[in-house]
Amino acid sequence: MLQNARVDVYTETGTRRVFAGAIEWPGWCRSGRSEDEALQALVGSAARYARAVAGAGTGPRFRQPRSVADLHLVDRLGGSATTDFGAPGAAPASDLRDLDVADLARLKAILSSCWAAMDRAAHAAQGRTLAKGPRGGGRSLEAIIRHVTEAEASYVARLGIARPKIGTSDAGAAAVAVEVHRVIDDALSRAVRDGLPARGPRGGAIWTPRYLARRMAWHALDHAWEIEDRAGLGP
Image (cartoon, rainbow, N blue to C red; front, side, top):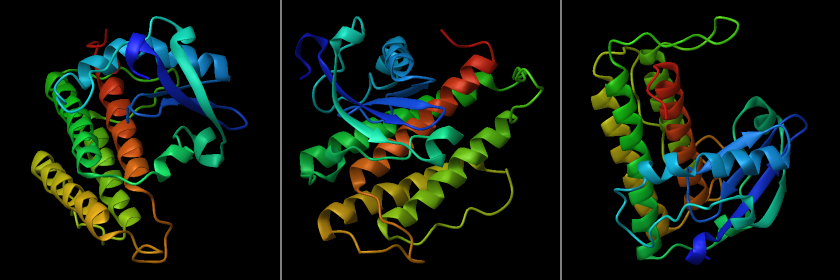
C-alpha cells in the first residue's frame, strides 16, 4: 500500500461537507464541499503532514502522493451532524481491527508527533496576533490550546476511563496537556491489554483505540495548522 506513494483512504460524506482521511495515517484528514474537493485537499496537505510525522520513527515512512490518482478509495462512510459541523465523526471499518504491540507503538508515535506539532505551532505563535475570520471570529491562542486539551480529556471516556480533571485556569496549560497525554497513553495501553468495556463511565459510546487516535491526531493537527495559518506561519 505504501509503495509508490499508493495510499488507502476513506471518505465521510455529510449533507454539506465531506472528509477524506488516510486509513493508516491518523491525523491526515481534510475536508471539502465534495468528495473530489476533500481528496484534493488531502493531497494538498501531504507535505505538511509529512513534516508533522517526520519524527514518529515507527513503522513505514510516510510517502507523499503526487496526485489524487495515487489515492486508493477503499471505504465510503455516511456522515452526520458532526461531519457538517466540521469534525470527522465516522470510523472506517478498518478501525475495528485488533491492535498488537507494534500497532500500538506506531499509533502512539504518530499521535505524539501530532501533539508535538501542536506544541511547536503554539510556541511559534507566542506574541503574534492571530488573524480573525471573515466575520471577525476565531479563538485566541490560549483558547485554542485550552479547547484542544479539554477535548482530549473528554475523549478519554471513549475508552472507558474517567475523564481527568483539568481545572478552569489557563495557567500551566502546557503542564495540564502533558498530564492529559499521559492519561491517554496509559488508557490506550490498557485498552489493548485488557480490552474495552461495552459502555463508557456514564453510558457513552466506546471508540476503538484506532479511531480514538485518528480523531485526536486530526484535532491536534487541525488546530496546529489553524494557529500557523492565522499567525502567518503556514506554508
